[in-house]
Amino acid sequence: MEGKRSIVIVEAAPAIATGASGKAGGLLALWAYPDCLVPLSYKLHAELAAEHDGVKRWGYRKLGCGSIEVTVSKERLEQLQQANDEGKAWEKLPKQDTAAKDLLKESNFPSDFDYVDREIVETWAEMGSPGATETAQVHPHHFTTSIAELARGAGVQFKTNSKVTRLKSSPTGVEGVEYVDRKDNTTNEIHEVTDIVVAAGPWTGVVLPQAKVEGLRAHSVVYEAEVSPYAVFTDIELPSNYIPEHRAKMSQKRKHKGRVDPEIYARPFGEVYACGEPDTAIPLPETADQVECDESQCDDIISYIGTISSVLGAAPIKAKQACYLPRHMRFGQESGPLIGKTKTPGLYIASGHTCWGIQNGPATGKLMSEFIFDGDAQSADKKKRRSKSQPIRQSNRLKKPVNPLGNNTIAANWDKKQTLAQNYKRLGLTARLKGPTGGTEKTLGVKETFGPSDPLSINGSGSTGKALDEARVERDADGRIVRVIGRAPNPLDDPLNALDSDSEMDDGEAEEHEEWGGIQENGRETEVVKSLIQEARNPAPKKKRYQSEQEREWLEKLIGKYGDDTRAMAKDRKLNPMQQTEADIRRRISKMNA
Image (cartoon, rainbow, N blue to C red; front, side):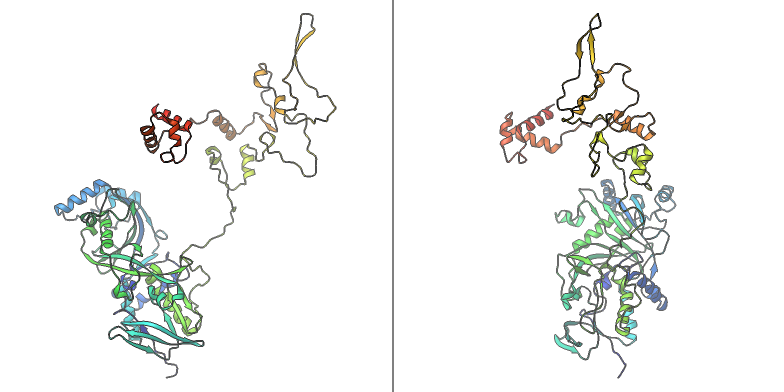
């Protein structure tokens, strides 16, 4: 019938939301990326929830979100182990405890955050603007299946267990979709197709290899627990000797060293979701229902969270699962999602949302409907950057602000609003190098001359004039000159030889303030200059250098092999790979034995 359209969704898995759309965290945030999608999608989530009772159907709600830093000590692990051995029931954190309240005031840790042991939290930072409701959530499986039910009620057809094998097209546009019915392994085709939208998540690269969308596996755990509505990004430092119990039983080492950072989301309907790091150990399977879950990675997440949360450590595990996130790769780097038309008329793509698929799903659907029915997307701000990288903002400040980090006295008196020359002039310093430092510049086109008062002036060798000079003389009793005490011979007219040394001056002969090479001591120094002079007269004591443990071990190996023969030590290329000289090795040994 003219003007009537039919929509068919072809799904390779046995049911809707079998992949990441059903196993993700369901976090919604205005601080997500990309900027061109997030505000629209966040708004649409709120509108969908209001229109279709999303609070009850898929658990839409606002929630707090932040990040914490925690250091788990060996003593805490021992206490947790003792509590587990004794079968001690978890006692909920007493919010009336005075010590806990005092700690809360200092750290701004939310008073109703009840599933992380607050006594071990070192820092808390709220995500987004403080006090603003910029974070919300949905239950991803309930949200996806509920939207599918609404679509089915509007006439959309669903073909599950149907794996797409080919997209048929011609130079004029798309023509059909070929798929395999996994139930009876028969090949079927949808004919007379006008538009195709490839939204296959991590399998987009299988259907359209040129899209460069691939899968990244991520493991997650679902707890059964009623806790306060908070999502938290953790940064946990574990003791160096800590090994999760499940790995210790199998005599395995800990997979992660140093710090770990699982994410924890309190979810509606009595659940808590937690996820760990992604991996590429197992290639993308053919369909979502064939995804392999490595339970040891899920157990790692459970163990790490158990060190900071006694509530979740005692909570029943509802699910251990894995899914693949779709990421769009360009030149080996993760890029933003692909949304829009392709070169083939009637062929569209909507994929590559990584971990923000649920967040940006509504906006993606709206934009695709605009592409297909209106010819172009109007709702999104396409001028904004499409990647997760923050835009570069130009400011009116100096492109290269001067930060005098070399000297604390100058840095403390520095005015960032002034230029270098203005600061130097105000502080009583010279901004231009002069003669004594070798910084006198030549004037182009003019022969350089020196005045007689310049101590660095050099008389030309071709000069016929006699230069006036001073000398000390020794006279006899009759006043006749017996000996002239002149200066040292200076055949090269070295200007430094023409300067009187302090040792040759009589007391009171030198002026209190003098000028030398254009730098004048006038007795009117600023406080900054006086501080700098004082620092120069009292340099910081030189720190004593101690030999490292590795250096001592290296020297002991040489001594153990060669005794006192430092010459042989220097020639040993194996024990002395850096080819330290004999004298250097001898000096190091003497220092070690001192």
